[in-house]
Amino acid sequence: MGELYAENGEIERGEQAKDWAKRLKDNCMTPVVAARKGMKTDEQKAEVKKLEEEAIFSAAQMFRELLVNLPFMSSAIQDFLGVNWKDCKWEEEEPEEEIDEDTGIPIRKKKKKGSGDQRITELFWGPKARQDEGIRTGKIEDGGLPGILYNMLMAEKTSSNRSPTEYGQAMMASALQHGLATNMAKMERMGIEVNFKPGGSM
Image (tube, rainbow, N blue to C red; front, top):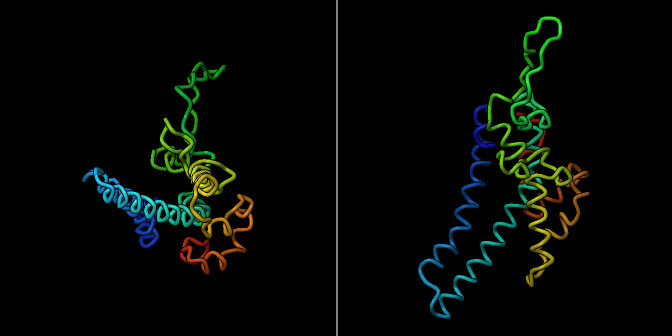
């Protein structure tokens, strides 16, 4: 996403999209590095547990930001690339050539828009081996990465002994995605950054 934004003149938004990936990696590595240093003493175990809790809360905040912004990002990227996410699917394994009955020559099929750039296919549909990981429309109900993030947040909320976060108030049901545009002010009041709104420079 960061690359596609930057290549289409959206430098600032491209940088922020890249920043999410860096922040998530850095956040997850903090408890991992601490655990690698050793977990022999009670103090070390307690410190790692504390760092894990902090990493989970930080990741959940990032996932909430993404769930709010992904529909706008998907829509914007489709607009400036001139593609429809449904048309960017992975091709089936080598389809049989169709032969023109009159000429006996193989029929050349028009290439789909976006099919020349594998990044676009991976963005919307995920890597070929994991096609449930693409962003699709960015909406929870269309599955892909938004659905995975939503399910992770719900599992964390329902199976954890932590007290519920503001996530439960803001995004308890995927139905909220339908009314997202009317809830921007509420999201921003809760500290969820929403800066991929349609309009403006998009």
